[in-house]
Length: 254
Image (cartoon, rainbow, N blue to C red; front, side):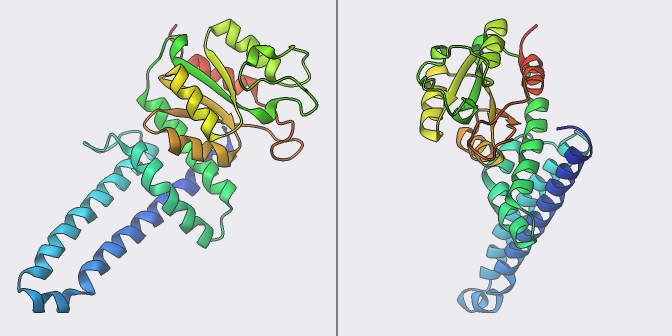
């Protein structure tokens, strides 16, 4: 995910995060300004009490957004803004999606930009782990659509015929000793995570499934690798094995 496309995705994310922050701050200001006259009739200090509460929320939103932007742009977050990935995952992505759609951006562009920035934050936050703490989580659409072997419950049922990427992924697993699993949906993915108890997940999926997976598994970190869809979504997809192996080597202990 290098090059011009990667830079444009990061710029889109920065633009949307700035717009989302401005909208949230505007709403907080309006919540104080609009009822100001009515609150004064209840108690002389009521507007100021509400203003103080909303002011604190306003500062928290600005601090979180500014910390995230600084972390992205200059790789140095503000003090006490270390949990910016959580703010991004749980709060800002849904708001960014609404704002981006209203501005005419596609869901793919919005979610891809989110995945790009999430990966940068994960790379910056995490160190290295033993192979037993790393899970490679793959989508079932990597399996050849004409294959009758069931790999969801036991990926070693694969015959390694080479007609789909699964054989290469098994070789990667055997070479590095990490966990490898295939999930057909969120429920099975959560069951696999509970069973394997990884410290980090390196997941391959489409932009939609990766975004939702990153949200569902937080605070467990997920490094996302977008799959390739030469035959359209959910049918005989492929995975850039070089990118996957590079990510794996980054998180493996020497």
